[in-house]
Amino acid sequence: MKKEKTVDFHIKWGWHAISRMYNAYAARFDITMAIGYVLLNIDLEEGTPATKIGPLLGMEPRSLVRMLKNLEERGLIRREVDGNDKRFVRIYLTEEGKAKREMARDGVIQFNNMIRERIPLDKLVVFLEVMKDINRMVEEENARIKAGEAEELPLD
Image 1: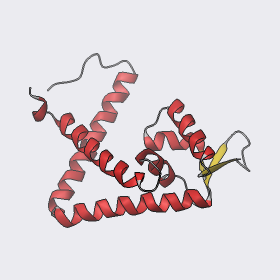
Image 2 (image 1 turned 90 degrees about the vertical axis):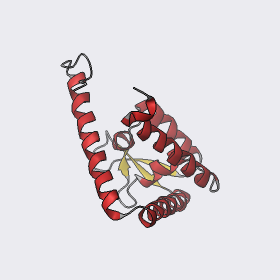
Image 3 (image 1 turned 60 degrees about the vertical axis):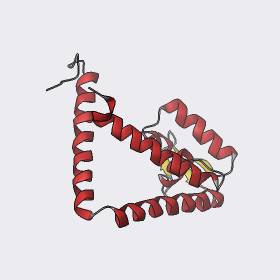
């Protein structure tokens, strides 16, 4: 099978193009796409437990630790021990972090508005349904692999 005929090729190709576009946009504000995504996933009022950020973004713990350290050093976040449970650390945005978050948010909105202007709604609805189905199938397969139930990918 040629790579251009595989589903995963098109998903990865599309994501890399979007990633390059977001990084070019973010560079104007001295951040990266990854930083923008972290900032967008921190609750403005309540903060977010550090342990919840990684799974939201699909980041490995080591990468997340490095990212949070970098964000703290840059003055974009602060860490506070949770008032209710001292075992948890909550991540809060600083004023500078909130400003950078708003810049990232604007970029995401601009991109999504551009897509909605150029792609008919009926096509977008089908695309989103298909992506949900693909993600559900991948999660099911990951669960089977993790449980040791799958030895090879089902090809039928």
